[in-house]
Amino acid sequence: MTDAPALHLAGIYRRQVHASLERIWENVFDWEHLAHLHDGSFADCALIDAGPWGWRVVLTPKGAASQLIEMRADRANGRYTSTTIEGTGVGTEIRVALSPCGSSQVDVTVEFHLPEARKERLAVMGDAYVAAYARLWDEDEAMMQARERALAGRRPPNFSVPRLDLGEKQAVRAALPLKFDFGEAPFRLVELDGKLVVHSTVCPHWLGPLDEAPVILGQVRCPWHGYRFYVANGACAAHPALKLGPAPKISLIEGRVVVAWPAGAGA
Ligand code: FES
Ligand SMILES: [Fe+2]
Picture 1 (cartoon, rainbow, N blue to C red):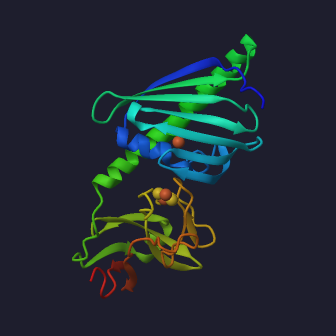
Picture 2: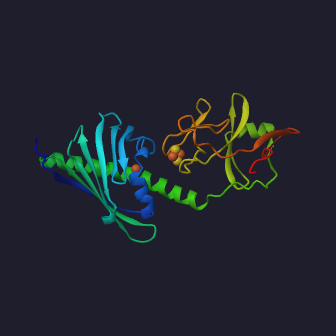
Picture 3: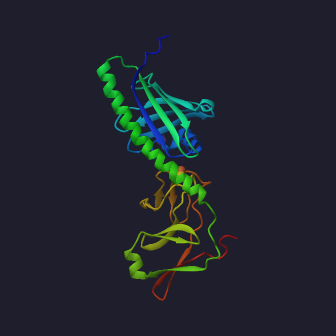
């Protein structure tokens, strides 16, 4: 049995995160967002195991070899540690402490403990980790805040709204993709194979935003966890239990594009 490598503190990243402790723990356990929300940093993330204790994944940083990473949480003490079990930097521990300082603010302290004894090298690596974590927490904070807003505003569409006139056909086509609210729910009108199609812009997984997602092969991809949905019928091939919310039908009435709920919607 070989001894664990000696670890040295390379740097510390401190930040006040404007999100609730609940959102932050949800994000910490959410291994699935790593290669999607953070697609500038990670190319792939494959689950090995997960539970109330944390998770173990094979994580592939962009342009680098895969690593086996384990996250272990100590929720009672507001701490978690990510350890590199295999791959580059094996033995590295990233230790995080979470300390709430209000209902929706948390002081976060991230320590980078590396198996590197050379002082100059350690300093360079510490700076790189601090810069990388600033970027990751920027992305996480934006997602957590958007999710908090989406959860607070979540309600079924109002099916009693009869119809909405989106405008004259040529002007509507010129404005595509066109975002609009109908029945107090957000939608987007897009063109698919020459036909106009409306789809919900709320991801049914964790309420991620689909309003800016390009339509590729008839599907939109959610930026938070990468689930894809067919805009024509809302189906998700990889997760059949998930489906986009109901969308209004389109009619052309005297040269104008009008949307209305299909018969029986909301029944
Ligand atoms: S919120 Fe998870 S895939 Fe959309
Ligand atoms: Fe993250």
